[in-house]
Length: 211
Image 1 (tube, one colour):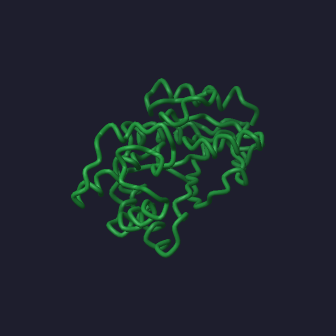
Image 2: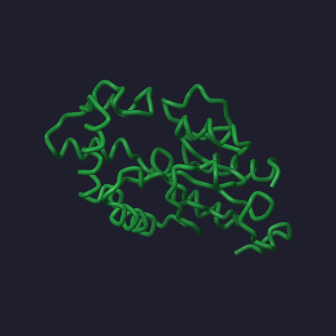
């Protein structure tokens, strides 16, 4: 492994020290909508492939999904959790390799996810999330479950949620938008995959944005 650059020798976790990446999971590292669609298909409920390209973050607002109300969605989500949704979801192509390269470049990867938004199954969600990260060889130094992402400073945040993008930027944080149909109106910088080119983009941003 390369020597840690002098400016990161303290390895402090924070905007003024070590390069910190706050990384979302669903819609950024994993195909959440594809996993929910697969679960529904196993229950005999057809969801057309076009439904995966939703124009809204909230699935209750989209044609093709069988959710008339938020409660409908929550019940389906909880049932999918009980079948270990978070341990079996498909990673996005190239994510493990890309994150390993960032880790090798001395980026402190902090997973920050709002997966505990539904009560009653937290132990399963936490365990399955950790299992998925290990099984898919995702390097990380911290695993945080919170919806208050603006309370956790980082050099760079990568997120797909419109609400998170807005809140983090209002808090003065640097956000890289992970490209999804429902966030296409937000200004960049953005990445659309975990390609080598996009890893280079992220490494350049770590150097160009103040630490």
